[in-house]
Length: 57
Image (cartoon, helix red, strand yellow):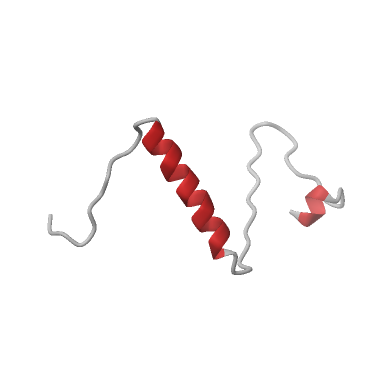
């Protein structure tokens, strides 16, 4: 990501290209914040289903 933002590498060339940013730097709190935002927006828009974990089928 740093190289793309810094202009050293080219990012997406077309709208169909897919860019993946993989970060194993231990930024778990960032993933939690994003997951919370996704969950909040999904609930606001009545999307998805609630799943109860730990109970039998």
